[in-house]
Length: 243
Image (cartoon, rainbow, N blue to C red; front, side, top):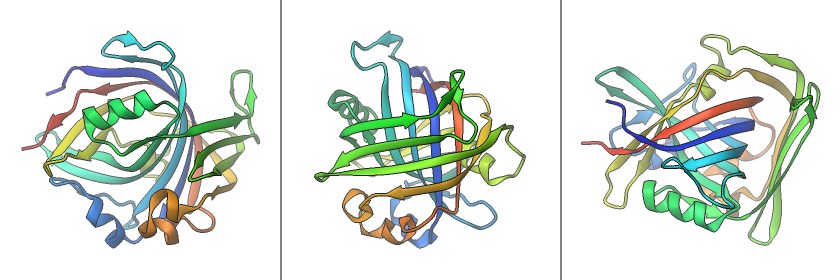
């Protein structure tokens, strides 16, 4: 049963850099009631940056908090429900530039949000991501600037069935561990996105201080894959506690 709307916004100019990771590293972070999801028996974490635009919470725009960046580290899970498999994401850390946004997310979903300075640079062509352009997000954490960027190759293409790009983007549920150990599940709605393949994608950050020791090895070097999506309007439904 679909729950009521919590948030409506646009997610735009998404850069997704994906790293293969040992599933044993992820298991301690898996919420109760879900299991790790894999593509071709491979597990991934993704560094994702994007623009939150025209944000409305419970139908209301919040002054000075409608347009902002977000950078997150996430991995992929699934849960068997009455309507079949629900494929979702779990966030290791989410970074936004506004203290109030981080606070609301921690209170409502117990997500690991942090408020940091963020900036971005995106090459556009007629209002959309430019072919052979770049998308870059940077944030200041622990006294230093950290960056990641992806340079597009060619134009946007529809998602291919059973592709890695489809696996990464087509997860429409979020799961978060609550303070009592239970799990909150919430639905995210958006249409299928077209994606640009990328070259010269990389993360330049101190993974140990930003994300913790378990993720250092996975985030060193070039990503396994990278792509960019122009995004769309999204709806985030109110969460519900799993039994």
